[in-house]
Image (tube, rainbow, N blue to C red; front, side, top):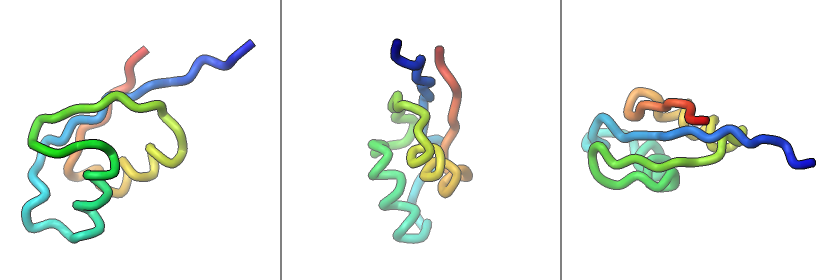
Length: 64
């Protein structure tokens, strides 16, 4: 039986203007482009690590 995979909704709430280039690339790699855009991703360690790196720019909420 397959495990239930947790999902998270990630929303860009602050602009990447004036941020470090690596932070901009991380936001882009998460699939976020414009302000208030959001994506739903599986809560893997890689995704959660990327979210932690730019936590000052995004909002993360768990969805069932």
